Length: 172
Image 1 (cartoon, rainbow, N blue to C red):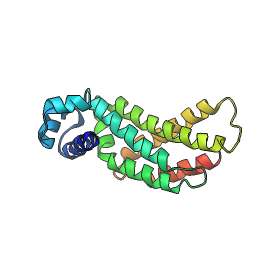
Image 2: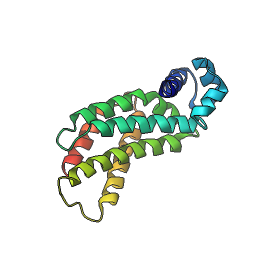
Image 3: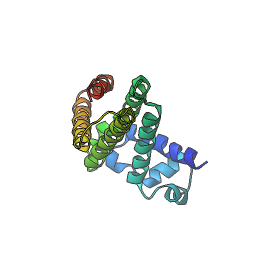
Image 4: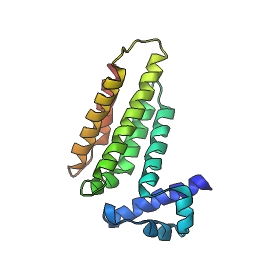
């Protein structure tokens, strides 16, 4: 039930953000939408930031769980689905005081997925040298920037971004 409640809260947030500004969504709005008590919300999450962090971490874990060193295609699809699901959150965050928070969540997702991919490659006994953390941070930052640029346009093209990430990872 716990995971279902968390997912229901995320779904409620995604519904509310279609109608409301990012900064205006409150815990009260979420609990009313889910027909749960405030106590239930606070049992699961400290605040809305922690709720969104949990959602991004859960999605990132899904991506990392399906990826493999030889077959990145399933991870690609999962990543595109994740970015498309949260597209409205990204767009609303652009004009929000929480923009940096969302930017950091996007960057962490890229960082974690790239780290997981490289760990798979390392298990194949390839040497990536001492600068692996720098390369991961640089790559994650570059792709986070591409997400920000694409949400500033009318239509998000996450598929192209993830295809380009895939091409970059093959070169690592």
